Length: 536
Ligand code: BG6
Image 1 (tube, rainbow, N blue to C red):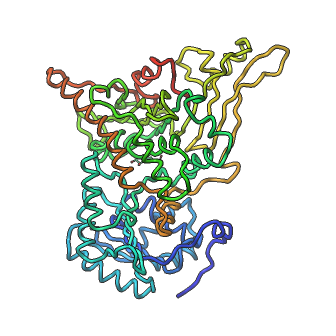
Image 2 (cartoon, protein in one colour):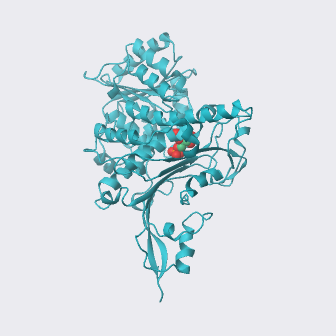
Image 3 (cartoon, rainbow, N blue to C red):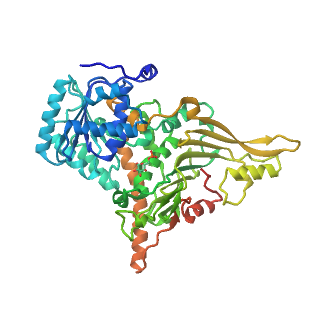
């Protein structure tokens, strides 16, 4: 087989293990996710020599394509989405590892052809039987694909000389019942340790760093609890609207699309107890314990703690955005939420009484994901409030909120997940001068400055799958617990809508103009407790 000089990346190879050979079958290989994320990420891993020369990709989708057509599409994807990083020598070698076969997702004949092709590729490339199936299709075909894989005899049980693994994209179900059913189905063919439920937030360096910050630094753990923490805020804001994904989004909404997975993961990592080791079982056990401790909501309590809203036309991050109701694929009377804010509580010794405020939405003023831990203020502030204190401090707080000396003097630790990845600790300092003027200053760490740009989340996650490390993937009990809490909110919403409909009165969803920070109701959720959302 031809060899090639790939990108010199000695440090990367020292840090990471190179995986074993494998045949990766991508279902939905001609689709958006495969093109935007998977193929560019696999190419980058290959280019960095983190995948062996006999790591082979077989695309499977309905569209009839030849191997060469698939290669040429993959090339365009890599050019468009791998930061322009297409080394032609590396690409030429990589392209010879790309193959394609078309077929339906529920057709045993198609899967027989798939089996034959896999067998011949395995032999040709001396792969030794390792198989990785990646479901990058609409969720409606997850079950038929899994059934056909089982029927075609393509799933080897764990413990043999080779391995079989499956990666399942989100959404994994649409409520507790469907997630449970999908788990039952998948686990009738695969074993749990062969299943990698992906949440790409866990592949982000900044998300993994939450655990490192908490558990590799001695100063945080002693104060990471109800005695010192006043509240925790998690914001995952996007400036884009649904952008042509109206058909999918109508059935999802912000609660299912973002809260069930990404925000629940961020809550778990921020609030979980220290695991006894950094391995899949220990970390996931603690995340599960935390999810179990999230206070369940009765349907009638939901409107008090959870705010939902939908965007109207406006301009976000300089882009004009049509009203959600005018997006393609959206019903003109849709009540699908594009924004959710949730005040939740965690019933355990560490967090009793500490509110966790979560919010996520589309068409907000900018893209920004961050976790802010606000510490209690000092028991007695010696220093008089001065012009310097109020004026400067206000810049880092919500401009709309009333000035509150106690709130402004709190220390806030902010973990910026993206963009401008980094960590800031807001402290108060004396402004130089003859009087004691307090002013907030930030102790700052930025990823870009220390380490350069973080790699794409999919690179890390794909490498972990081929290495067989499931620490950053979601276990069955974890995904079902997250759905259980989300389903309670959905039940509250159904009840709210039914009550209103039965009064012959249409349900009115709060609205917010695109380019603003959400509806007034979300501000009130905090204001009634004397809090305000941090400016992000
Ligand atoms: C996906 C959601 O899981 O995450 C999208 O389906 C959302 O609606 C995306 O835009 C956001 O991911 P990121 O990495 O850009 O924050």
